[in-house]
Length: 401
Ligand code: GLY
Figure 1: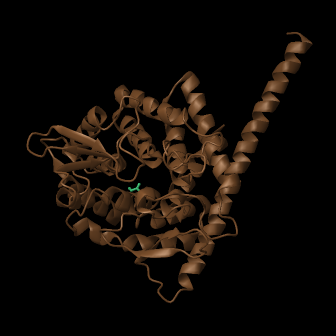
Figure 2: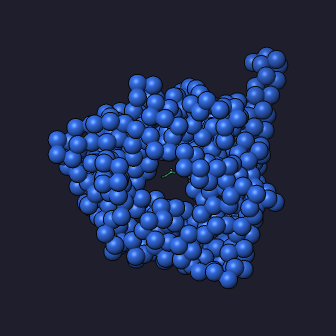
Figure 3: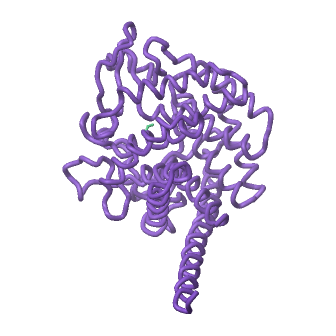
């Protein structure tokens, strides 16, 4: 080997080591930031006269500094994210006080395991809280609660359509006989988990059926998704695809697409069926190719007000978390492309979107429900949940390199 080749190889090794170490430092630094913010949030919650372990942080609106709380009820779909944030923070900080808080907030959701299903959000509610709690503690009581909740969720399954009914309340309200929303893809994970841990194959079959039917009807030719797919309850036929939280029926609502990318990535992980991997690639590519330069999407890719439309940091965090897994399952160029994109999204969220001293959340600039003029340019708890989840994945990857 000539000296020149040796020098070249040494430089490549040095460059790779520096890149990995900087990625590692950034992820470790971000986890430490999350821990500091979590401690601030706990202190803020406990200083309030209305403090209770049943009251969950939901959002901090623009120009506010305090969490707005929501009671953990079956209607409050976000109530599992704060316990989930605490579990992740406990996982990375090893702070036993955080674990104690996680246990107490999580316990407020136990009622869901013996309450009839209000809607599909049982997965978000119970898997982000009890699911992470079980993963970290192995508490057998948690396992039973997850299994019972998964059974409850299946009561929404319509075998004629082949999907879960997402919003029973909208059957009458909007005349959407059997409606399935794209967010529901996220709630298949609890079914896959329960099928495995409860030896309950029908739950696996329901999750697969939901994913397959949705794959057939819930997407447009450009691989953007509808928010809502409406089916005929009697014939099972697909009637129409519409939006609820997006700009229009034809547009790409950023968080909806993020749920879809994440959901189909989980389907591949749980089934090993390559059709889900291929589909997740198509959904991710449709999203990635339309991102602005900093890789944080506007709330809807087709809002004509862009570039003066609000961003959605939550969609970026959800997508980054999904892309890190999708990268692990992919080969060659795709593997690199997804992992580089995810790291860039997370780095930009951390450097440009974090709440720092403004408020105790992790991130600013999420959009909840733009058409309803609700939670615009706000800190929202699910953005924090997927941010810490994704940062944790990045830190783990960096430490293994
Ligand atoms: N699951 C409702 C939303 O994404 O806003």
